Length: 263
Image 1 (cartoon, rainbow, N blue to C red):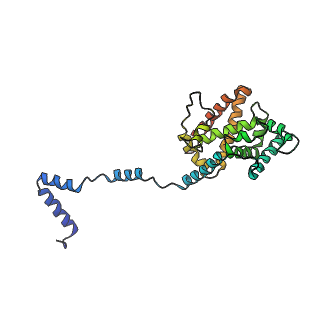
Image 2 (image 1 turned 90 degrees about the horizontal axis):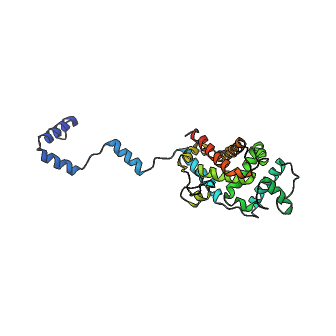
Image 3 (image 1 turned 180 degrees about the horizontal axis):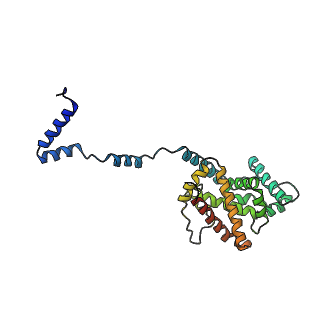
């Protein structure tokens, strides 16, 4: 029988099965077990084992991890790197405000920090919510969008405090503030009185394209949020007490921006 062509063997087996009584055929099928559809099996395999990540997905996750670490890193007065970055912030805001240069620490610096929009005599405590990420966002805005920052410094809202708030808003939208953690709770300064927070799953996915190429995508999104904040302020001729409403409008504008961005 083994010397017979394969096609003849298959025909013979089919003929033998057909000649069996139905009860015997059902018993044989039961012994073999079910034979699911091949496409369904492949689908189930994908459910059990995630599909391989694309290079962009991997780059996005790596950059989110770095930004998340900055968000969780508290600033520390006296730390060499922190003091260096802080001095750049002080020097940049001093130049935009056309103030006389001076030291970024001590009694002489207090008026400069207040003019820059910090609400304490020293800025350290105000970075508490956004950690080192708030400092990096502020410095990036000053170095890459000086004209925008000059307008905000001249507006009714405290510039530095507004920048830190927008850092927190963008951190949630971009998925940097990890959902379901203390980050997520802390990084929603615009939550309503009930404590309800918006679902950011979709906007976080939209940020993959922005962060897949560079960390600058996050900092540019922060800059766009500052731009939206200033636009909201000008639209209603807002005063200092209108910050919350303008910040919420800025957040909504950034969400719309992301909704029309690349997937």
